[in-house]
Length: 147
Image 1 (cartoon, rainbow, N blue to C red):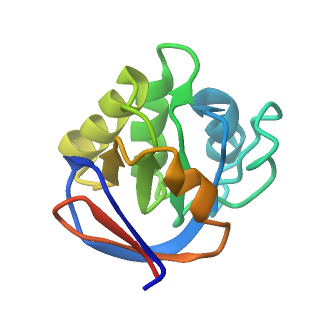
Image 2: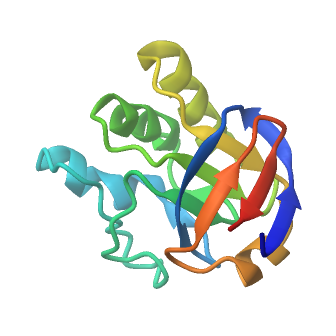
Image 3: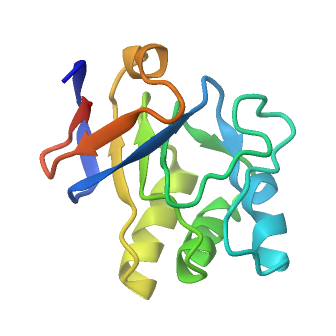
């Protein structure tokens, strides 16, 4: 184990997976719309303003970022990508979760039964330490371990 982080559980669960990391927030609508409209088998980040994630596959990954940004449709977009099977395994927020992402992960969990493990308040150190393709293990209590 290389590093451990502890945050606040928004949507609990235990998952292990590969990380994608952004030091900047991403716009959920810009990120996911193209993958949803084209009925893609994987979600690719199409938010051109996010240089860290642009054109990277993000479905089935653990996304580490400060927050999401965008219009009020952001929550519905997250719920929709979950319903389409394009969701990430988890969202790990360095900051307090924003209302757009919070509504999206809750809608996905309640309306579609698709759980996106979500932890916030992990601190800036997680974004400085974790790199793309690092293996992360998330525990029910909000502990994130870099393997």
